[in-house]
Image (tube, rainbow, N blue to C red):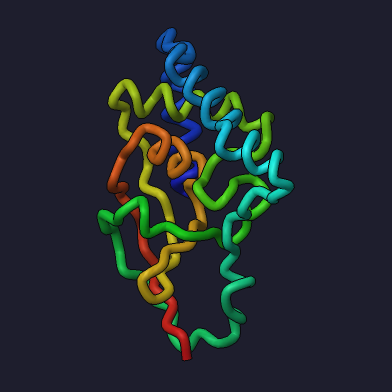
Length: 160
Protein backbone atom coordinates (compact mmCIF):
# COMPACT_ATOMS: atom_id res chain seq x y z
CA UNK A 1 0.00 0.00 0.00
CA UNK A 2 2.87 2.38 0.75
CA UNK A 3 4.42 1.66 -2.64
CA UNK A 4 1.10 2.48 -4.31
CA UNK A 5 0.89 5.83 -2.51
CA UNK A 6 4.50 6.62 -3.43
CA UNK A 7 3.81 5.76 -7.07
CA UNK A 8 0.76 8.03 -7.16
CA UNK A 9 2.85 10.85 -5.66
CA UNK A 10 5.62 10.39 -8.27
CA UNK A 11 3.09 10.43 -11.11
CA UNK A 12 1.36 13.53 -9.72
CA UNK A 13 4.70 15.35 -9.44
CA UNK A 14 5.42 14.41 -13.04
CA UNK A 15 2.08 15.90 -14.14
CA UNK A 16 2.50 19.09 -12.07
CA UNK A 17 5.94 19.72 -13.53
CA UNK A 18 4.40 19.82 -17.00
CA UNK A 19 5.56 16.35 -17.92
CA UNK A 20 2.75 15.07 -20.08
CA UNK A 21 2.58 11.65 -21.63
CA UNK A 22 5.49 10.73 -23.82
CA UNK A 23 4.28 9.91 -27.34
CA UNK A 24 6.60 6.88 -27.32
CA UNK A 25 4.73 5.54 -24.28
CA UNK A 26 1.32 5.85 -25.90
CA UNK A 27 2.56 4.19 -29.10
CA UNK A 28 4.12 1.37 -27.09
CA UNK A 29 0.84 0.75 -25.27
CA UNK A 30 -1.04 0.62 -28.57
CA UNK A 31 1.53 -1.78 -30.02
CA UNK A 32 1.50 -4.27 -27.15
CA UNK A 33 -2.29 -4.21 -26.73
CA UNK A 34 -2.76 -4.81 -30.45
CA UNK A 35 0.08 -7.35 -30.74
CA UNK A 36 -0.76 -9.33 -33.90
CA UNK A 37 0.73 -12.50 -32.41
CA UNK A 38 -1.80 -12.24 -29.62
CA UNK A 39 -4.93 -11.00 -31.38
CA UNK A 40 -4.53 -11.98 -35.01
CA UNK A 41 -3.07 -15.46 -34.99
CA UNK A 42 -4.74 -16.52 -31.74
CA UNK A 43 -8.09 -15.32 -33.03
CA UNK A 44 -7.52 -16.89 -36.42
CA UNK A 45 -6.89 -20.29 -34.89
CA UNK A 46 -9.58 -19.94 -32.24
CA UNK A 47 -7.13 -19.91 -29.34
CA UNK A 48 -7.68 -18.01 -26.14
CA UNK A 49 -5.23 -15.51 -24.72
CA UNK A 50 -3.09 -17.25 -22.12
CA UNK A 51 -4.12 -15.80 -18.74
CA UNK A 52 -1.80 -14.61 -16.02
CA UNK A 53 -1.39 -17.34 -13.40
CA UNK A 54 -2.98 -16.77 -10.02
CA UNK A 55 -1.23 -18.09 -6.96
CA UNK A 56 -4.54 -19.55 -5.75
CA UNK A 57 -4.77 -21.59 -8.97
CA UNK A 58 -1.27 -22.98 -8.51
CA UNK A 59 -1.52 -24.04 -4.90
CA UNK A 60 -3.84 -23.88 -1.95
CA UNK A 61 -2.72 -21.01 0.33
CA UNK A 62 -3.24 -23.18 3.40
CA UNK A 63 -0.31 -25.36 2.29
CA UNK A 64 2.24 -22.68 3.14
CA UNK A 65 4.15 -23.49 6.30
CA UNK A 66 6.10 -20.28 6.69
CA UNK A 67 5.79 -16.73 5.41
CA UNK A 68 8.67 -14.34 5.94
CA UNK A 69 9.79 -10.95 4.76
CA UNK A 70 13.03 -11.21 2.74
CA UNK A 71 13.54 -7.49 2.17
CA UNK A 72 14.53 -5.60 -0.96
CA UNK A 73 16.06 -7.59 -3.81
CA UNK A 74 16.75 -7.20 -7.49
CA UNK A 75 14.80 -9.89 -9.34
CA UNK A 76 14.65 -10.99 -12.96
CA UNK A 77 11.53 -9.77 -14.73
CA UNK A 78 11.29 -13.14 -16.51
CA UNK A 79 11.00 -14.90 -13.13
CA UNK A 80 7.67 -13.19 -12.41
CA UNK A 81 5.05 -15.71 -13.44
CA UNK A 82 1.81 -14.73 -11.80
CA UNK A 83 -0.31 -12.64 -9.51
CA UNK A 84 -2.09 -12.80 -6.21
CA UNK A 85 -5.13 -10.88 -7.40
CA UNK A 86 -5.06 -9.38 -10.91
CA UNK A 87 -5.39 -12.35 -13.26
CA UNK A 88 -8.10 -10.75 -15.40
CA UNK A 89 -6.16 -7.54 -16.08
CA UNK A 90 -3.01 -8.89 -17.74
CA UNK A 91 -2.12 -11.86 -19.92
CA UNK A 92 0.65 -14.35 -19.18
CA UNK A 93 3.26 -11.96 -20.62
CA UNK A 94 1.90 -9.04 -18.54
CA UNK A 95 0.32 -7.30 -21.52
CA UNK A 96 -2.72 -5.26 -20.42
CA UNK A 97 -6.07 -6.79 -21.32
CA UNK A 98 -8.12 -3.68 -20.54
CA UNK A 99 -8.08 -0.60 -22.75
CA UNK A 100 -8.94 1.35 -19.59
CA UNK A 101 -5.34 0.75 -18.40
CA UNK A 102 -4.11 3.14 -21.11
CA UNK A 103 -3.70 6.23 -18.90
CA UNK A 104 -1.98 4.58 -15.94
CA UNK A 105 0.20 2.37 -18.15
CA UNK A 106 1.28 5.32 -20.32
CA UNK A 107 2.11 7.48 -17.27
CA UNK A 108 4.29 4.74 -15.83
CA UNK A 109 5.96 4.17 -19.20
CA UNK A 110 6.62 7.91 -19.55
CA UNK A 111 8.19 7.97 -16.08
CA UNK A 112 10.38 4.93 -16.79
CA UNK A 113 11.45 6.26 -20.19
CA UNK A 114 12.51 9.52 -18.55
CA UNK A 115 14.54 7.85 -15.82
CA UNK A 116 12.18 8.67 -12.95
CA UNK A 117 12.65 6.29 -10.04
CA UNK A 118 9.46 4.43 -9.15
CA UNK A 119 8.80 2.47 -5.98
CA UNK A 120 9.82 -1.19 -5.97
CA UNK A 121 7.26 -3.80 -6.90
CA UNK A 122 6.02 -6.19 -4.20
CA UNK A 123 6.11 -9.94 -4.83
CA UNK A 124 5.64 -13.26 -3.11
CA UNK A 125 8.30 -15.87 -3.89
CA UNK A 126 7.17 -19.50 -4.02
CA UNK A 127 10.07 -21.74 -5.00
CA UNK A 128 11.72 -20.07 -7.99
CA UNK A 129 8.56 -18.24 -9.10
CA UNK A 130 7.38 -14.76 -8.15
CA UNK A 131 3.74 -13.70 -7.86
CA UNK A 132 2.89 -9.99 -7.87
CA UNK A 133 1.19 -8.30 -4.93
CA UNK A 134 1.73 -4.74 -6.18
CA UNK A 135 3.34 -3.42 -9.35
CA UNK A 136 1.53 -5.12 -12.24
CA UNK A 137 1.69 -2.02 -14.47
CA UNK A 138 5.38 -1.45 -13.65
CA UNK A 139 6.14 -5.06 -14.64
CA UNK A 140 4.11 -4.71 -17.83
CA UNK A 141 5.97 -1.55 -18.81
CA UNK A 142 9.35 -3.01 -17.82
CA UNK A 143 8.73 -6.03 -20.07
CA UNK A 144 7.62 -3.83 -22.95
CA UNK A 145 10.75 -1.70 -22.58
CA UNK A 146 13.02 -4.73 -22.37
CA UNK A 147 14.09 -4.30 -18.75
CA UNK A 148 15.69 -7.47 -17.40
CA UNK A 149 15.59 -6.67 -13.67
CA UNK A 150 13.43 -4.75 -11.20
CA UNK A 151 13.76 -3.80 -7.56
CA UNK A 152 11.28 -5.74 -5.46
CA UNK A 153 10.19 -6.13 -1.88
CA UNK A 154 10.08 -9.91 -1.49
CA UNK A 155 8.03 -12.05 0.84
CA UNK A 156 8.87 -15.77 0.79
CA UNK A 157 6.16 -18.41 1.26
CA UNK A 158 7.43 -21.92 1.92
CA UNK A 159 5.24 -24.80 0.79
CA UNK A 160 4.56 -27.36 3.53
